[in-house]
Amino acid sequence: MKKGYLFVFMAASTWGTLGIFATYIYRYGVDSFTMVFFRVLFALLILGTYITVVLRENPFTRERLWFYAIYGFIGVFAFYTLYFYTVKISSVGFAVLLVYTAPAFSVILGRLIFKESLSLEKVMALFMVLVGVILVAGNVDFSINKLALLTGIGTGFTYALYGVLAKFGVKKERPERVLFMTLLFGLMFLAPFSRFSVPKGAIPYLLGLAFFPTFMGYVLYNHALKEVEVSRASIVATVEPVVAIVLAFILFGETLTGLQILGAVLIISGSILVHMSEGKKDQM
Image (tube, rainbow, N blue to C red; front, side, top):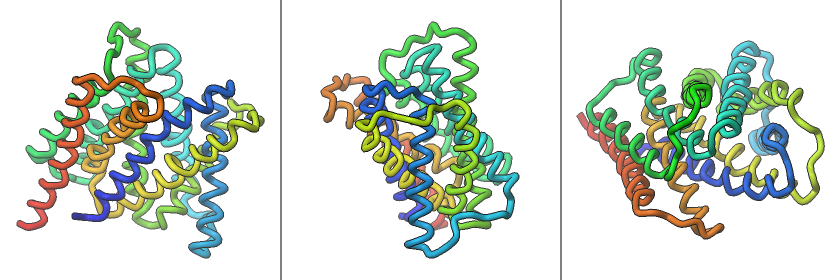
């Protein structure tokens, strides 16, 4: 088993905690943009300390600043702006559902940009995880206005672009520095829309949000993309909503329906299929 797949699974598992931290933070009246701003700010402090103290390197670079500006705008600012706006004009379930159109976009972009194979197993796995995400999303209202549909699909597309840009970034630079510079530019784009103060009680949850689904999640994912195809990584990363609903069940007592459990099984099965199909390819 390639360790890259383990990194993707671990990254997706940390992303699954995002909704848990957000639930606690929203209780303090923190708006979405401010929450994301402090999430990125604290993640930058953690990541900068890690690169400086543990890796003993300079987290900053003057090279390819144009690339990091584009990456920060698309992967941080545009993604979260589209996501939270979709939630605002529709529902959380609808927004989450359309975020996971990303694997479909990743398969297409991986084929066009990196010439990744379009195997039958990959297509089958993609179908399984998309159906699984629909089932996990639960009772989603599909009578949504066209604008929400467009912004939701835009969320999925920018999420897929994050993986594509990360693939380019880690080819020439350490994944931690790629993430640091991307978050730095993302923070600049977020700043004009954010408040610069939060209740003290929200700070521990913001630190948790910065450490687990941001610092750990994206560092692991960027490392995974050094050896795993963008399309395959995106499909495996759909285990995130499975982790999210299990945590919601454990911490908040939310009910798991039979269809959600079936959806979780489909997502996990699709992820396993992606890994097994590449294993067969490597043995040929």
